[in-house]
Image (cartoon, rainbow, N blue to C red; front, side, top):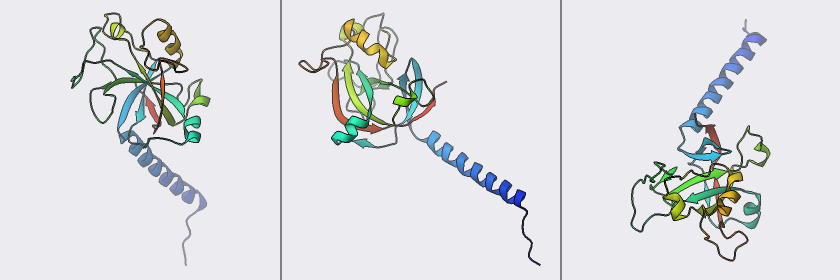
Amino acid sequence: MLHRPSRPSLVATAAAISLALLTVAVSAVMAAPTEDVYIDGQVYNINTGAAVIFDASAGLLQEASPMYFLEFPVAAGTTGPITLPSGYQPQHNGFPPSPIPYHDHVLIAAPGLHGAGEYKATERVVRLRYAWSYAYGPAFVPVTSAGEIAAAEAAGKLEVINPGGQDPYQIWTTTVLIRPVVAKNS
């Protein structure tokens, strides 16, 4: 006689298998290389193992949300990590593969935040640069929210890097990063 498992045991087995697969998937995402970003004044981690698209199509550029790279000015030939007079160290502090070796990241939203409707894992790189006098002053405090950028521009905390542009403090590149937010940094 053929023994058939009862429906409750099949459901329990399927649930256990699903839980095991979910645990493996979450572990794989959490094990991926991450980097810190600021979102709405908080520090989050993004997955840096995802794609980079140079010279993205117009449609992709339009659909991507901005990822602000706030660059730190450094003397020519600077290598290795830096510490500013304020004691601050950039999130991306002098290590490859970035063509901008010293910078912080600021995103406009993350999953689960009030601005989550604006969150997209596709991020268009927007370059800004701190002014020398501000970055190397003892009162330096990093921009940690997209909402602070206009005030930082108006206060002279950022350099003009795009004279004649719509916003002379910003360069909207054609580079798109696929960088999903992984978790809030505790």
